[in-house]
Length: 485
Image 1 (tube, rainbow, N blue to C red):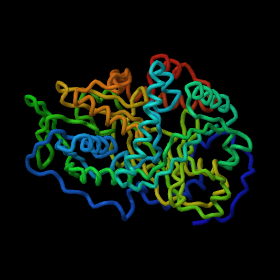
Image 2: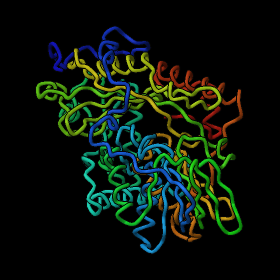
Image 3: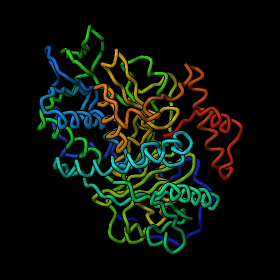
Image 4: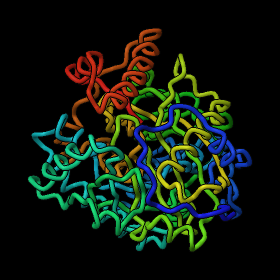
């Protein structure tokens, strides 16, 4: 639906993000379908059958999201004689892989700043491997015939307020010192890419591919099957045990006897209980607009179709789809006591209305636009923001999780490294300190809920105080603890 009228871009710049839903924001999302846009389409494949009876495999992969799918494809391509089975508890891409923003970034460290803070000694290698991973993903989509509406247009990280500009300039300088192709844009140069009163400057990173995440996942599953992988859906693994030199996996209707296992269960309750202290499930929310008209597109000046994100402690991510809808998500990351992942939390009307109001603050030209879909879901976050690996059962099982919302690209690297580890290989990847070390654990309840809740509120306070971090956040930084979406 077109807006009632297109407002000019030259409007007064907002002093702050809206802190509560508004009537106009509510109107945007009031009729939105309560489902992820990517999965609510007729081209979604019919679910494959569930596993029944007993079978065996050289490699069993648990989880049908990006990490599990990449592991299956990589294993089958590397050794066509290896028998591989993939078990998904629901549908392929039903979890975070099918409801994210589709930002496939070269970053393996959840951004340059986090990489400098946590992996400075090996960051040059991680940056190189990240770009190589992005190139490999692009090549794999071509090789496997996957049409995921991929656009390697890069990403603009935006300063919404003047006080954020110097920080972004520092990021650009830090990246350039590491031979990264980051560039700071402002003034007329920025205006050629986006027309928004909430854009005071931006850092451009060319190493980001925007994809249709569901089509990528569906394409990987189909490619895995063509390569000989047995893929089962609605086959949740309920028990995992080491039996001699094998691993026994139990589902509701069947069993698998496997030599090796890769566990890629994202925000689901980890099958290895100890990992529950290293990861927490947090809820992220997004809305999708109806397709923009040509006049609307012209009014917002989004000429390069880059992915966009802003640069506060609480941030948004937004992008154009192939049919020119705007996906707008992020801002708050909600944790429910006891790591509650009840699907009822997926619908949070006040959160959707607030996101819609923020969208209109970014693009007041779109006054009157409507959202077609609104959804939420859990992502797996850890205290270092980037994923980690765990080797268990005498080397027969490897878990990889904790991507913290930036796993579309990093999952390819995570899967390849997991294969190296489960096969006992000594590679450049397995020698990384990032791979060998784990994040600091989260405390048990009720301290977990208390700490995360206080941190969320302190993020908001810091943003209201022009980025100045209070004692709580400074202490968290000093301890190397984090919480993010």
